[in-house]
Length: 212
Image 1 (cartoon, one colour):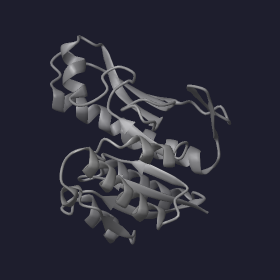
Image 2 (cartoon, rainbow, N blue to C red; image 1 turned 90 degrees about the vertical axis):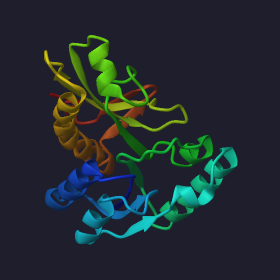
Image 3 (spheres, rainbow, N blue to C red; image 1 turned 120 degrees about the horizontal axis):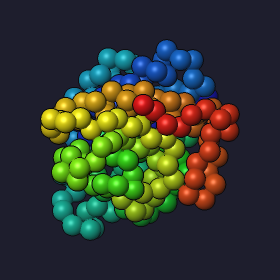
Image 4 (cartoon, rainbow, N blue to C red; image 1 turned 180 degrees about the vertical axis):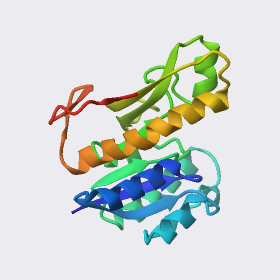
């Protein structure tokens, strides 16, 4: 039985999708904890209502600057490791993680980013895609490395950018696919179906890694 720890900063709608899929799908896994860096994160209430242990490591308690980031990550790592995770899942966790933290979870930490990486890392991805004239946009699940929004790609979801789209409309269309793709990617990991070959991730059973 694999243990999954999910990190959130807000509502955590992808966390909700993963918790529900794990419960309904008979995964060889359990959601061991949901952890937030914000005490007021709405997703904590959802997790508690579904019997998932929760914890908070408030980044504001550590101050600002590089030393504060290192201290926060060290405490977050301590709390995570208390749940003996096989996989750490970032689901709207709005922190830039230190290299030491990402190295500790190398090969067992996933993130979802709302763009077709390597295009548009960082923030405001949907607006940037619209402004760039992209005809498609989407989201990417990838293994986390020290470089922000980089790492071997597990799966991608693609949607059209429609005439008249604004940021909210495009984001909503992408999010619907995220809620299908991210639980699938997490399930693949806990079932041992992912093989990382350099920069490429292969699904051992040949299941499609593109969602649309």
